[in-house]
Image (cartoon, rainbow, N blue to C red; front, side, top):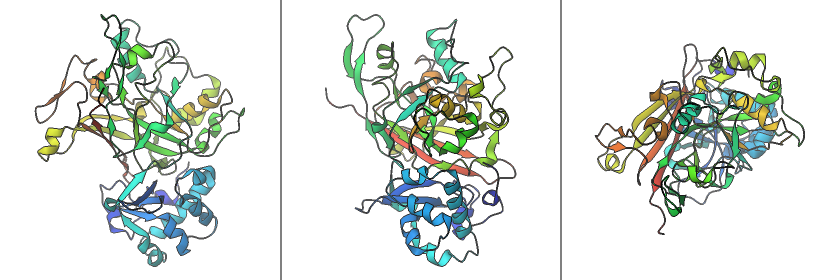
Length: 439
């Protein structure tokens, strides 16, 4: 994705709230979601964020304000999921983005027809923006992998394959939920190290995983791998993702096949998908590999990936306890990290996922894995922050947390900012842990 007129930091919108210096959704962003008015029986339909408003794409399509090649893309994006729009491919995504950018700019003639299509974001509710056929979770942060490995293998924290291959496992698509949808604490088998038989109980070690979700756009045919040169044309955009984890269920179940019930009870994503094109100004080189690290194998390497394969996205984790909520206190930030620290890029995730001929479909979701940075204050999971539960966190109001308690709300946020480019953001990814079902 190259820079074009939609990235111009001087652009301003006739939607006044889009011109604020701290908005997540200026005219340079234009992310996609699926929404309806809160509590209504309206049909779900596609929307684009602009300031504190949502442009209703279904209504906009009927106005005739968008014409030409972008009109077909608009019609596809106006449905009850974004899959049809994703399937059209990068040229269609770019055409609609350009048309919307021009139509929402100050002085645009389309204002008269599009202004009635705006709905306030505080008056809407969202659903998962695509029908997710398959969900794969990766393990792209070497810092997270090392921190976790040290807890169990102090002398050899990284497995021998980590620096050669993007590690992943297949998750559960049906339990991917949208921000704001709360979930019950999971129940499963756990076994203490010094115990005999396992017990079935509610998880006592509920954790978070700050990740990004990668939404696949255009498909590849079964048997036809996606090369590194092609990989980014198959990615529609990125979203915030919290892969909630039951750390006491996981160690008993994951040998030899990997995570199962410890992960598949809920995965929360933010409603907004920020397109890869919108993220073009924030591309950076991936972190330099250590001198003794192996170079990526040929199918995982490209000159572009070496030069601009990472994205500078600042990411935050915040926690709000029930007491904080009762006392009117905002969620407290516990972690700030950045996607640019990831060892494996999203293009490498796509190339590796398909090297065996696996066919990705529009709407498929890939998780980056926990995006911890190189220092402990950038550790993006409680298991790392508390050293496996040994060192509780102290929150600003004096409460402590080792693991999440019932009623705790976790909020993920992300944004991109650099000199010479507009600040853009991802909105929020929010979820609350409810008490487990009665046993």
